[in-house]
Length: 297
Image 1 (cartoon, rainbow, N blue to C red):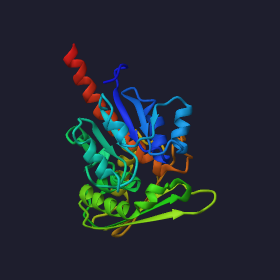
Image 2: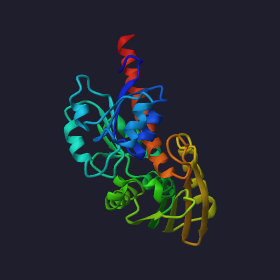
Image 3: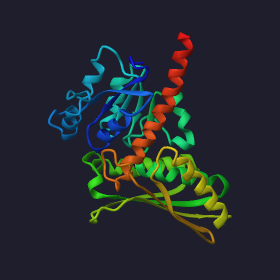
Image 4: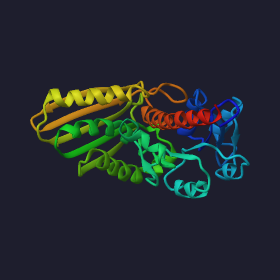
């Protein structure tokens, strides 16, 4: 806990996701942003945060592990190839490691499905932006309907996709497919990704097609609306734009508008995974801070 009674937090990575995440953390009542690290001091994100007086360092993961006082929470906003090494180096410490890459190294977490798992796992993985958008809906529908096949197509604007995400597209697809299977119980799953070059940029969208039994417009819509309401508690721009059922087929479409912190409104793909990661960390912080206050009272 830092001097302001919040858990101390570091962010690894100063790209599109890392900078927006740092801004969100700086507004938290439970998390105190103490460091954002990159590997190059000339990185635009690091320079921008430094100009605003936020603490930054350019020595990468070494800046964390060489610190005298360990952090309580570390967010990894780099890439799936780098995360395993980061996890290994941070394993001797007690920090909660929240992985925003599709590395699948830690326990996969979808806040509205198994968010409390962060209380018992030191390394949690936020799957992917598409997974965070689609899995709450798929989980809700599959609980009451036998589903044989699920197809998830995510469409994101080209300018919202950073270099790390482009390097991790294979891992993105594999991790999202595995997470859909785990949290919905649907075995036959296909995930596809579209990076749209359209101008003006398109809003982040996830289209879900299902084949199953006992599907009705009323029951599917009720499950989808319930899941969407839970999501909007921490992702305000989460909107169901289509939900239709025809025989044994269902089609659901979701769009996510970003909150506009550090990223344009069309970049809901960045906003949803950052908001999900922050939500999980704040739930963890609430428990840790409550325990700390109980011990000192």
